[in-house]
Length: 274
Image (cartoon, rainbow, N blue to C red; front, side):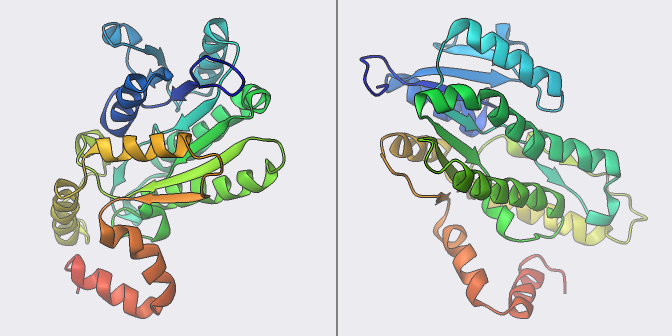
């Protein structure tokens, strides 16, 4: 419930048309929250869903402002903003052109931060909650996921800074870093073409298979939805929640303790890059 009222909290979840975002939206709706989701696709496709769906294309800055205006016509307050929408990318760091890097960072970094900027007045008025979905991949420059890791690391650092800057305003800021989940992310990723003439051809193919294998062994998205519900019901949530298989949750701690050369050897062996 919204503090001081008998009304449910208003929650805006970006990227709610599939995967973890969809699981969050349906789960929280069932728990009695007033949920609004976003999708890049036509919202009319989701008219049978039990909560409102709005259009948002994070690669279009004007789309963020349109979402803000549309939301304000429906609701006077916003209690929780969950920046879940994002884009995966697989490819060698040296094989990605500048425009592709820009698109990735627009979706994973600049878009979410602009959403926060646009909705911050409402969140400050409600002493609300911002949840940024980053990634455990943001803790390491993973082979053939360097661009994605970098974008999530950037969002992670901005989230840390924002948490400090908003201290004392009543707005809480939380970073939720998931590991591998069994979602449709593999089908929604951007893949850099793997040319047989490329010096990365063989290792790229090998790493792609390993990445897909990791996703297949991941957790169900409902696990993430339950973690989000727990955060919503925690008066003073932790700065960061890591959600995923045990080894992935403890990876950041291990990385801080293990010498970098040793960690590189582990990655080289894991992905067959010897």
